[in-house]
Image (cartoon, rainbow, N blue to C red; front, side, top):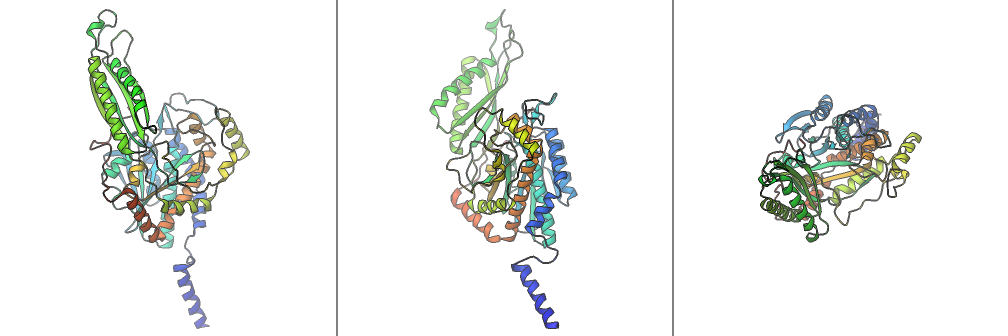
Length: 481
């Protein structure tokens, strides 16, 4: 009898280390269940951030809510990092490996919308979560909490670090964190993004540089003494005309966008001040830098030609994403484990009405149930993200889940609407579970981390040295003001 007990004890010890988990330890299915069990809590958190709709570097309450959520769960929070009041880290554990999870929470100006399937801005609100960052930050926090509980139950060593990253939309919040060395000890980074469908890929994105161009003229009566005036608006319009001619002479993958943020106060006053806000994007950050130099030359030429003075402030700049196939395969396997989700009849009615507002053909509503095969895009994606900078200094992996009605465009009122409903929350929970399982694999498999570093170093080349596109400037905390 005694020998049988000794054998069984030895078997349990062997199995705990190799095949299964010891009594009291958590499996992946346990973690999935634990996240599902907090659906009400996390959907309420996401809805609160959706209601707040705070734009870049002004996410005071949204950041505080996520910080408190993580503090309550046992994380040590450090706020006001990298010179950004709304940026923070939340850490659990110590030692290696160090696994980071990114969370965003900034909204976009100009896309206020109620959670209804027809265009209906919220009265008195100027911004909305048209890119789903209320879901992004909440799902990432949910994943971090679940992984922390798993680490405790399974006595897993290592450090889990949540990064609260503000102002992704043009403010380049993560860039300042990278520049300040806040990822220097991290072994791998996990993130996600809301979208119209599910999937993992390891393709790239567009590098981006942006800034505000301010012209200063001389005010005068536009009818009685126009010869005494020098129109700052003329400077902006002359620059815009030259940049629009420039479009013919840049690589075809280039995207140049601008808005006139200030154009004067009254038609009968020659504008003494005017401002344009410019973006330049291209798959290559070297192309972005050279094209931006030509945009600046257009601004200087416009100032000379209109007798005005120009100032240019770089407000943001991000690298293209450096995909990591090693990590993508791990995340893809976990996404397939989690699986998609099905619409209720009420959600189908909402989604059908949303799709009726699309001009082009929408995807099938059943696509939320499927997980497309893992792939690498042949070309860079059409968007830009400050996750790009992170991915060049530490192996990084991300996914997208269907938080919007299939076929929805990002930065649209339709995205805002769905993000405030159970459609958004279901996709959010998918992401939380997938990120949690991926982090568990990385804590358990040093070989995966090692191979991801080999891949990253090979892709970026031997002579790579990180230099932020924003230069040495301090965070543009007022870029949305």
